[in-house]
Amino acid sequence: MEKVIRDHLDIAGLIVRQLTGEITPVEMWKLQDWRSAGPDNEKLYQQLLGLHYLENRLQDLECGTRQEALQQVMARIRREPEYRPAVRYPWRWLSYAAVVISLIAVASWMLARRGKTVPSPAPMVRSYGTPLPMANTVRLISGDNEPVALSKTGNQEISLDKDTRAGNHHGTLLYPVTGGSGSSAPMQQLITPKGMDYKVVLPDGSKVWMGADSRLSFPMAFTTAERQVTLSGEAFFDIKPDAQHPFVVTTARSVTTVLGTSFNIKSYNGERYEITTLADGAVKVSNGGRPQLLRPGQQALVAANAGIQLQTADMEEALAWKNGVFIFQHASLEEILQQLSRWYNVNIAYDSRVNTNMHFTGRMARGTQISAVLNFLETTGKVRFSMTGQQLEVLPAHRD
Image 1 (cartoon, rainbow, N blue to C red):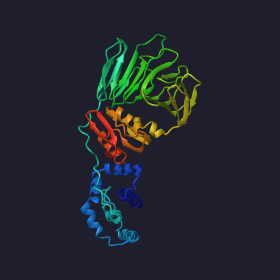
Image 2: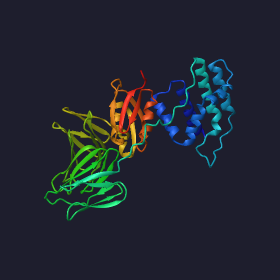
Image 3: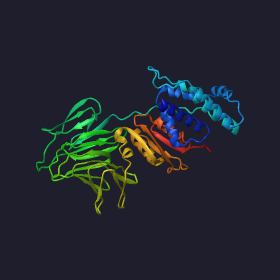
Image 4: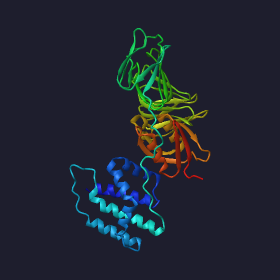
């Protein structure tokens, strides 16, 4: 019971801070998360911030000072009946409505004393036109053959050559596990479009989760001393241990060598850093100089024409894409919009007055419509957006 009360009072406190203009961006994201958690939450939010509703509640607070207002709130809290959970409605908190109403009324009273008007409730999601269609196929190119479209639903069998077939089963491409024979094997290219990730099980049994807008090249069978692949974009690797045949990932800026481990590589063109993050085991990262050894929980940052920087990784943020969420920890607007561009397949255009270095913190499921993500960013009061088709324009928060 006490936890339920605390949670509901926390939300009420966020609404108070929103009304008084003291809410932080992190708190705003928390409030938006609560609003989007269920229709009852959003309905209650809209009711609490309704002008006529608040006017009625303000009549109950006949007080001249802030202290008097707070004393009235505490008196109401003490009069609240004991909470008895309802089996049919476990998430409803109408038993605490008077507490929440009192807190909102105090905020409204404070605003009135400041000479401000109570703001109208912000819409949960502002429309940015027709929702963009999400991509639903990846492409596989085997040797010199024509590209094959792969879907994330259903099953299909792909003929790689006269003797070898791969299977696509509900979004996972499975190659037959083969051993080295010393002969070369046709190269495979797996290409994900914007807005889609994919999983492949390589010929050695290693698993690779590919991010959106990425390309992975690998042989149809690993037949040499090293298991070599090439990556452009982002992928998480879970490598099958084989001490006799190191696994080597080559990107535009670095070479990562492993024996058996789990790690993530983010290597998109145009981004400041290429980032390798180690989840388990050990890897060596080099870019022409002395190799750097990573331990679990570390990441290597490789800039163009520069050395390698090691730092402690935020593992939740680094692997968020693989787990189906966006997580932004003090991320710049430019970094956030790069992610949105890849996932929602939009082109970004900045107004020259926009500061791309402003930072945001928050999280959201990747299955969310882009309009909801943009709305979250706009509620911070730092930026606004206009979208036509697949063109997203980034504008200053305040119109001149």
